[in-house]
Amino acid sequence: MKLQTILNRLQKLHPKEIDLSLDRVKNLCKKLGNPQNKLKYISVVGTNGKYSTIQAVRSILKTANIDCNIYTSPHIQKINERFIFNDEEISDDNLSKLLIEVENVNNGEQITYFEILTAAYFYHSSKFKDNINIIESGLFHRFDATNIIDTNLSSIVTSIGLDHLDWLPKNEQNIEKIVYEKTSSLVNSTIVVSKQSSDETLNLIKKSIINNQSKKIIYKDDFNYLLNENGFIYYEDEYGGLKLPKPNLLGNFQIDNCATAIATVRNLKLGVKDENIKEGITKIKSIARLQEIKSGKLKNICKNNRLYLDGSHNPLGARALNEYLNTLDCKKHLILGMMSNKDHEEYLSNFINISSITTIDIPNQPNAIKGKDLKEKLNKYPNVSYKKSIEEALDSINPGKDDLIMITGSLYLAGEILNLN
Figure 1 (cartoon, rainbow, N blue to C red):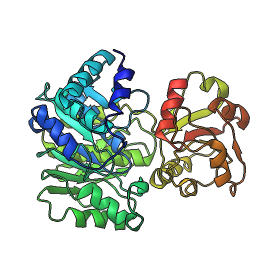
Figure 2: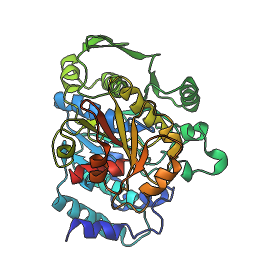
Figure 3: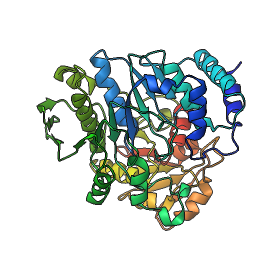
Figure 4: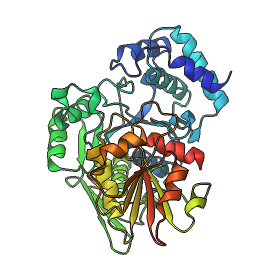
């Protein structure tokens, strides 16, 4: 049976895409033998930087010959990306068999798509009991399907900001509520808190976890780094200092994520050596996060210009992306596609010195805002235009020789771009 047929069937098991509760996934996992209670975890919560932090931890542990399973969401190009076992993406055939087995155990009970995928991950991971599982929390965390584990090696809190506000009541659409939802139910272990966008957010996190019995490792208080002008990073924590090569990631915000990964790994005391860290951070694999497109169908349209792809989709991500763009001495052109439930004007307000903005449709996404409608919302900005497709957008820009083109606004758009290219 084709994988997509199975996925389509699983999406019909619940009338809602998201229904915040832990009862259904707990019930299914109980039928599966509670596999989630047999595993070792590093859990990652936050708004931005979760994926990059996970990939940094993964790369360091791999260099140290420590086997990992990884569960992330959403996927960029195909759903198999969400299921990594022994550092390898699951095949279509094995994923199909896994989902059918879990579907049969579920026996038609109401359960959301994400919940049954999460239960399937736990079930298959239990076959690799010695591996470390790095799991990314989905929406918020308190009622997220990943939040049914009892023990944890470490919880990582990445940068927290405003996103997914449409899932909160109007009077709770604020940073205080989001911090609470993401951090108030972390299990006792070690909590590593990444660099935050403001002191207010950091103080809210500290307040939220104050009664948690975990060891707290907080950026600036317990670990820090300095980026040297020669490209080296000087990292320091209670275990001493490290002189590190710059990671193979663009943007200072990516170095924040890398430093958080290093703090986590050093505190876990898994036998990871300094040499493993130095090598691991130069081999991080990251897609749709400040990713340069160097070849392919779309690159051929703009052969003489740098073409980048970034899945940022909220104000916090836009600020980080703009910070990187401002380090470049060239004209910048944005190609923008977004989902309907995002704050489009607030997102774009974080960019400065942009030469042109071209809005486009996101293919195969019924919940995306139409490019024409997005253009109308952004008409106060100069040089805004609409093109239906990415190919038309690239054709229309006419950039100068050294100009840069950035495609951004949505991880779903990023996936479509990579598949098309």
